[in-house]
Image (cartoon, rainbow, N blue to C red):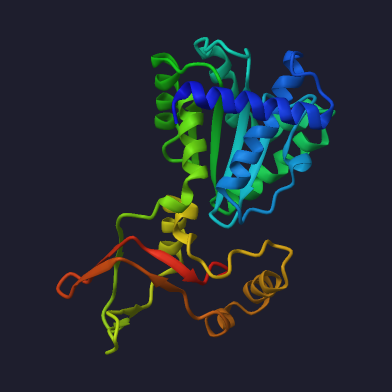
Length: 305
């Protein structure tokens, strides 16, 4: 998609949101609110298994520079977004100070003493402070993403690199999405069915795999859940294009049962949920080093697990 076509599509989408919410598109604040909604919807399509509600995820009023909090607990990721749509048609350079101010929020939210003194009037910020402690304790990866319809610069890229270096031992990542990056993410989400992981590698262990005889070439193996989590984070929804039954949402009865088993009888989880089925274009298994290379992997049953 050409950038100009995307800008036109974005404008139409923001106008539609403003019309639905009875906001004025010509009002910069209300247009910015529509852009926040649009960004939430983009992530909702990016992570269809995440069970988020727009009204709960959007933060407005004493927002501590945070506009959207999007949780993808199934992949162990949290996205904290600041969304800027300063002008309708122009692509001004993104202000370095705005990015720096937003990225600095990470250190502030790790400072419990600061949060207690802040006395926020927004209960969502108070709840977010408590969530930070939970995310850190459970090793969630927290993404701070500054999203703007402006144009990225060498300075904003360098700033993101600096914050990533300074926090490389923490479960946090910093990024800037300018208009071109937003376009790329939008195109990626809209064409997800055309994208399949080109190569996924597994390292198997002795006596934990077998290749049954049959009409189709196949292999059955045991792999750690942590490895599956890594693959899900890396390839996201492109793994599940052919999935027979997608993730049903945390409110579904199947997933309530999964959660109950994990919490109350974790040793029984394998017996109740003991398989993931996948198709692929081809695979190569090196018996000597036990490396399995799978081309165009598609999970067709097991998204719940």
